[in-house]
Image (cartoon, rainbow, N blue to C red):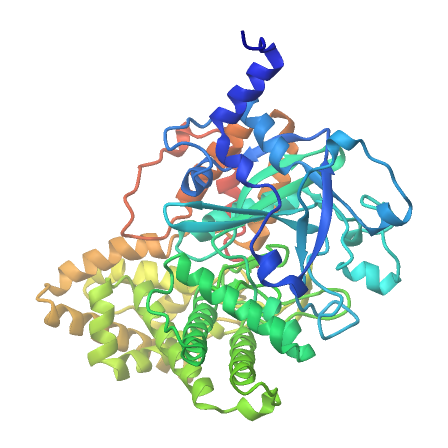
Length: 611
């Protein structure tokens, strides 16, 4: 007769049967073997005292972690599995040097990796000491032909933290004498990433996403993140800087294979030299378009030459300094204590420099000899970047007007010069700045923009539809006038009046061309543009300031918010910030929303023009 099962064994087997996919996330990752010089491996142990503050059910279903029909509740069983998988802390150099003892049953069987990559903050500018300073990669999981990388921030102090090399010592995890170097992350960081990334994802921008947040006493958390491929340019640039041919080849080959396996790159050649040409073409296209998209949508990402804060596929990562502006505040600079950031306008050149580094990498891999980056300045590929950037900016502008995809394609193929003409007055108003000049703001400096282009693009077609005539220059500037503008800022000059006339002239000509080509009555096209533009250029649009304020508000509510409450809140809030006019929309009645949601929407409205 078989051995009788006790209750704890029954509970354990039931738990494993309910969520078996979590067991695959155990620290093992193919990058460890494919690119051994690109990671530092750590033993890890269970971390007690945490509880699940948030779990992304939608993302977990997409990753195959939970069944499609799973309801939106964090049961005790699910919470136990989340904590068992993700509530961990590394056993670091400090622990080993000081012979810190841990319970044997708490030590996990597999090692977890912190990856090496180039970082500007480090004294060593070749990436010999830098990388994941307070994060580890939990592993991979595959579902429906797509493999996801999972990492966690706040899992302990690694040797790759800037603090370790600035202070020249290893830190105990949680050391209160050092902030970033202590290895912990905070709950408000996780919430900021959560809010921003879900909104970016909702609007079709590639981004890492928050899978879950585990909270501990004192506002500390482990923030769990997932993406289809978490490789950054900086994972390659450190080896490029060091002239480390073999490991550079390992990382590039690994990345290309992952993109191919995931089905994102479907026509990759077999021969190495051809694969690298393909790699360069794809990366040029990705970074030219993402920098154009960031500029078009006023997304401040602080792109820089080290390629540290962006993913190889153009996905946004590290929301600590990510902002979305309400206006084109193109003089804003983030104050990072030791230096000021790039501006949103400068992001294009930074992205272009990243692409130049890709060109240098490909040349190095082919010839096994590293040439200076200056060789590639002004190359055919750099010119191609400029062309793609310009095309994308113009396409984005036509979409902002409210044109449909086939309308945009027609204008770009048959009437490109007209689009170029419209871009000039549009950019003039978009870039107009306050007479006040540079001002200090909470986390940096800014020179305020004075016109809200969303308001102009949203209101003009409605006015044209009702009046059947253009507006006066005075009315035009008042429609677009932002709260940052003074009367002196929006005063009319002969040149500004000319720009108003050109804006309306070319705008009307674009609509006229579309009307004739597609056999749509001009009034009917205006009606369609009005409806689409009201969504694309929605009055209430999230900014960095509003997210910061909303997170503070949610933090105050957090003791009373369950994971289910937070999941519903994020879901509804990101729906409100969906600017795709082609998405099916569920009508929302703000009167039926919670007081917290109404307060959040009020904050969005209050900060809609900010930084």
